[in-house]
Image (cartoon, rainbow, N blue to C red; front, side, top):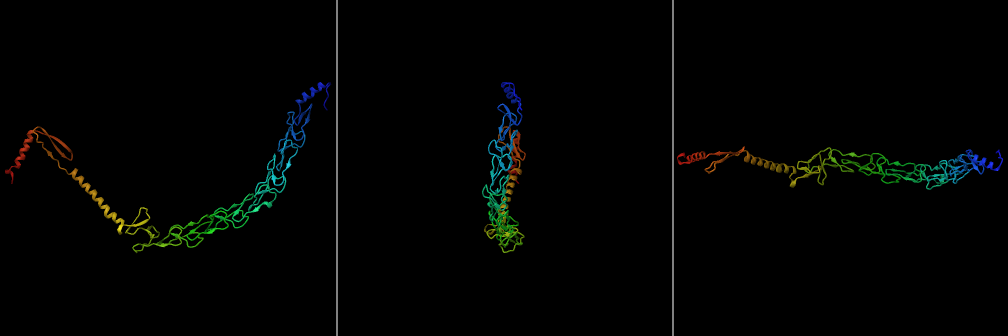
Length: 369
């Protein structure tokens, strides 16, 4: 009970001033007195009351904060005193929701107040949002599959297949088969010359060279016998032949001869390997290319090198020294040429006359035999 002051002025001062500073939390100042916070509002102690925001509510007086709507419920406006329940085909997953969401594709909501929708089972799909019952879930057709809660079915990828409806997964194509397209309900058999060694192949593998397969749906290839060969993806092996009708027995084909595709462990004597390293090529006009190289090219090169060596030897290493005597009477220079180069020597006039006299004496008729 509030005590009344002696006069109205004292009452106003005591109530308005004193109570303005002393309203408790959960109360607000209403005109001249503190009052309990009303429902749909909260009073934190600032002498005012505030409306609860969307997603919250206040269902009693004197609250200092609003309450969150639980999952499966919502409040869309301000000042709510209660939360509304989510209708069928909708849900709210968290507390404090201001609205409910429609159940997504692949799910359905058969009850109210759901915090999560129910998923369509694996092997089925739900094509649209906001579904009410499981009747919306449709089965996947053969060649497709789905996980739980799918909005559509997925085609089986290449290398797999499914034969039945409502498949939850696809099956890998068995050995010797393949599927090169999506959404297959069966696999194809590998034709002869091809194989698959395991499951789940999107295409067949070619039998490698020197092997073959004669049956469809092979899981491996058979090696060619010695003396035979085969191309890629072969269904049989070819016997190795020699162009000169001389049998060549090779464990594996090594060279290919022209268009005959004859194989050898090494090229015959009248053939040589071409620049690809895989084909035997015959020499021009039946002459082996190897013989042409050995018998013609090599001797020519050897003779050219020998001739060059003789020429150099005769010109530089076997030249004799020569002495030239000038005819001038004055003191001249003689030049001695040889291995050591040029050697210049001075020849006096008297020496020159002596040499000339000796030459004339030797050439006179009296000295002839």
